[in-house]
Amino acid sequence: MIGLTDYLIVSAILFSIGLMGVLRRRNLLMLFFATEVMLNAVNVAFAAISHYYNDLTGQMFAFFIIAIAASEVAVGLGILIVLYKKHGSLDLDDLASMRG
Amino acid sequence: MYEAIAFYLFSALTIGLFLITVMSKNVLYAMTSLAAGMVLISGFFFILGADFLGVVQLIVYVGAVMALYSFAMMFFDATRDIKEKNTPAALIFLLGGLSALVLVLIFAGPIHSDAIQALYPMHEGVGNAQDVGIVLFTKYLVPFEVAAVMLLVAMIAGIILAGKKMDQSLTKDTSVDDADEILKQKDAK
View 1 (cartoon, each protein chain N blue to C red):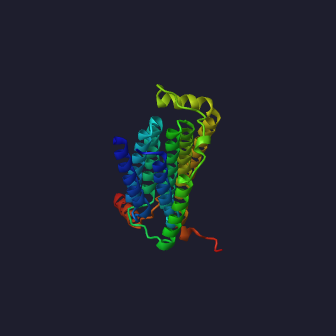
View 2 (spheres, chains in turn green, blue):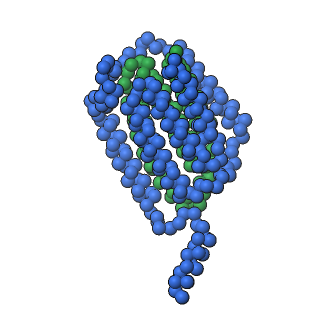
View 3 (cartoon, rainbow over the protein chains, first blue to last red):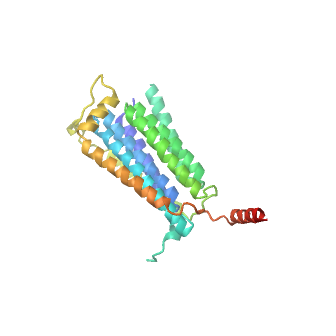
């Protein structure tokens, strides 16, 4: 029988995959993909908790996460297009103009 | 029984597809596997009885967000493989593994699960969409409206940011410009 713990472990694994991508990637578009993976992992955890505690709050939070993810993608891709026009590349190392 | 089979199938497939997303050098492969993984995530939602959430996941993520990404891919000339100087893999695996361990410990550890009470319990015999609608439009009305304003702001920001100088080519492919020049000269003759 599949319990809450199984879903949470799968969600944790997916979140770690996304976190690994965020740490590893240098291309901004790929970085966005990794953040989407993390958001989806959290949504799975919310839906699982909502189901096993018979509570709708988890699903509500998942809806708002989806709305936030959609607006993040819209603004983020606009910024990426502006950056690409300016620098001709989406690599984070090329974009680091402030040498700290 | 079927639930268990579906759960293990979906989890193995999503983990594999998201690993491809994170590891692949080709933007097209990464995006396609991300879209497929999101479809399977909506499968999780259907197993969990969150029908409306699953449909929203399909429409918003697989439909809208992936379409946005594919349009962005067309701007960025993303058919080439990406050359990136990745952070050393050993460090990443160490950090990712450590954070995975911490997360599993947090989730699997003994929590005070008896103290958790359902704030907005689901009703028997009422469909998931009706239940969600009632809670969303009563208890969560203000966040819902704020989310609507936020989406409007995001739409305007996207138009303003991406809309400037849309007539210019982003990829600066000089050979195409040369071809255009030649065509213009031919027309002039």
